[in-house]
Structure formats: C-alpha cells, structure tokens
Length: 362
Image (tube, rainbow, N blue to C red; front, side, top):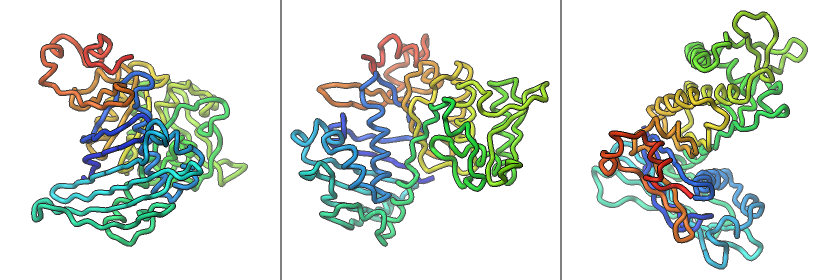
C-alpha cells in the first residue's frame, strides 16, 4: 500500500522545521497550543494547494498567520512529502513566499521519482516556479498526477457539531453518496448506498454501533415519501415502534456513528485525519474507537490528534507521537518502546502521560 513515508514542514504556523517519518497509524498527543492542530492544518493547506485555491486561502488566512512568527521572521514556508510503496517512491516539494498584500505565491514546485532498487538518486522535475497557483493540480507530469490524487484526499473529518442545526441531523440529497463528507452531512445518503450496494459493510457498521448503544436495533433508511430526492437518518430502537431520527441520539452516540461509518466503509481515503475524535464519547466507546483506528490502519494511513488518556492507553509507544512547545516552536517526537520497558510493566501509556513521564504536558 502506498503511504506518506516522510513529511518535512518548514516555517508553518508554530512549526519552524520538523521532519516526521510516519507509520500507518500515528497518534499525536500534547498540551493545548503545542502544535497538534497545526500539523493537521498543514494537511488542509496542502489540499487547498492541490485544489488551486492557494491565492484565496492564503489571503483569507493571511501570510502572517500561516508563516512561523509571521513575515518578519519567516521569508518562506516549505513542504516536502515522500510517498512510498515497496521499492518505488515519489516526492513533492513546494516552497512559497509572502507577497506585499499578505498572500502566498509559489517560488518553486518539484516532483521526484525514485526506483530505490535500481538507482541511487531520484529523477527530478521542476514543474513550476514563480506562480500564483500550484501546478501540481494541472500538470501532465505522471508523478504530479500521483501526488495530486493523494493530496485530494487530505480531508479533516470533524464530527463535533451535533447541535440542533447540525447538517448531519437534516435531510440530505439522496444522490450525494459518492463519499462521506468531512462533517457527515450526507451520512444518511451514504449509509443508504452501503445498505443497497455493500450490505456486508453496512451490517458491520450496525453491529459495531450496537456494542456501545444496546438500545439501537437497526437503521430504517428510505427516501422521503414527500421529497423522494431527500433522505434522513432514521433508526429503530429495540422493543419500540416509535419514530426515531438523528435528533433522538445523544451527542456521543451520533459522533460514534459517524466515526464507525468513516472507519468501516469499503474504500477508505488514502489518509484519514482526525482531530480529537474522542470528544463526548463514553470510555467504552473510546476503547472501541481505538480498535476501529487500528483496523483502518491495516487498509490506509491514519493520523489522529487527541487529548484522551483512555484512547492513548490502547496503543503501543511506536504508534504515539508527543508534541511539545520548546523554544517557541512545536517539536514532534515518536515514542520508543525500549526506552519505556521498565515503566510499561506497571503502567499503561496514557497513565505515563498523566504522570508527566512522556512530556507533552503544559
């Protein structure tokens, strides 16, 4: 499976210069303001670049907020991504600098291809320089096409909004079912598609929900009789014939339902990004969420920023990164089991975090 093997970020928000050698499953822990969310935002920024939205996004955000300590300190920001599958790797580098009006423009954009088994050095091609938008979105270079497809999936899934006005609780367009949207606004349509076309995955989602919500019997999904092009999330409670929809679910249950659908769907995104997915979940649901994340990581690559001790308790040290703010910058470190054996005999990983053995604390 092709994965993002290495990511280098320079001068982006609180990240001055960091290189992360990523695995299939990556859990990031740290205090508020340490830089976990800024790492997630780096992926969002790369996706905006891929969508040729650099000019608009950088103007809206402002170069001073995107660059490490603003334009006076940082004259550029740079990203280098290396993707690999077995002996074949390709890479993408983009350097951007601020303009007088507070936007960012591309200084240079380069792609790389490397057959590690046959050649010592990669093939390199500069695909743009001095442009307002990134060429990776339109370049006919084959490597650029591969990179473009990866960046297009860099979507942050955020299921925190469970208010009365949340989109997930409203009726959605029946045909909006190609992929699960990052706020789960098309959850009903997507689940209906799975029920009709991928029933084994649909049943697996239902079975998983029952583990944390025994009152849940099954979904009752069908197009609206009054508006056949619309569908709403409806379900049946065990032992009841009453009508229930998403507004009848607790916030935690609804969020877990979204997470289960995301992580158990047949075709996962190339990279799953989650920021504090544990919000509002019962400890039992958090434990089950850890199993879902681990299972998903066998089929794709997963990055999670979390504040949950219970969630961290479920993972091995090599899967966990600490994020600390040192010298006015974010520092990322992967934990190493051999340095912690004497502690792990008596404590779970999250407990060591609570005891400030791992760092990543205020």
